[in-house]
Image 1 (cartoon, one colour):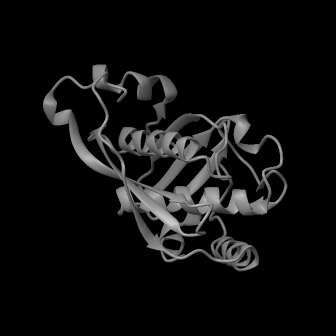
Image 2 (cartoon, rainbow, N blue to C red; image 1 turned 90 degrees about the vertical axis):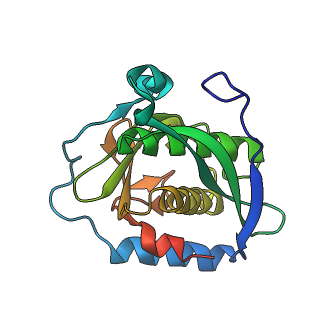
Image 3 (cartoon, rainbow, N blue to C red; image 1 turned 180 degrees about the vertical axis):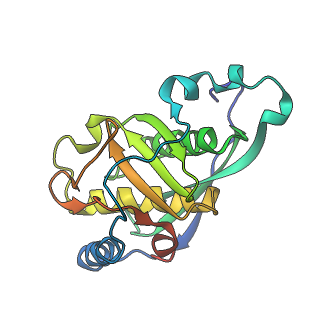
Length: 207
């Protein structure tokens, strides 16, 4: 059931590429992060944010039909059996406001990941999302994102899948900074370094 009360469209899966071994994937991700250090002081830039409450009631915030549109949202999820990346295309009503649209895409992706049963699934909730003038996305997740020890493979796949999904649906965004409870963090579970913004162009090329 879609969040607006209407039946949701069936998600259509398709394969977009082959998987990589754990060491190759992890090494590549760490190289990408190391090659793209953050610029300037480590703080969240100012700008409008889509709060979790906004995301739940965004359709009541839009006062006319021009503020929303139905489009195919592509959600990139790792397939645990084949080791390949699978994209699920689902028809979703999204806001035209870019920050709210980013939030809707992330919420839809988190739901698809949970439904997929893959090891990448985590209990994190989206708290807010926004895009600054420099084309950087900020995705603010709840503390559950860093709870427990999912392992380097699951952490790497989570970051790659999220980056690929944002790139597929908002192609003008340059990079993404992951936050936890509004704060920048160094690692996920003490393993994968996410202290710097992640380049979406480089993640999009990963197979």
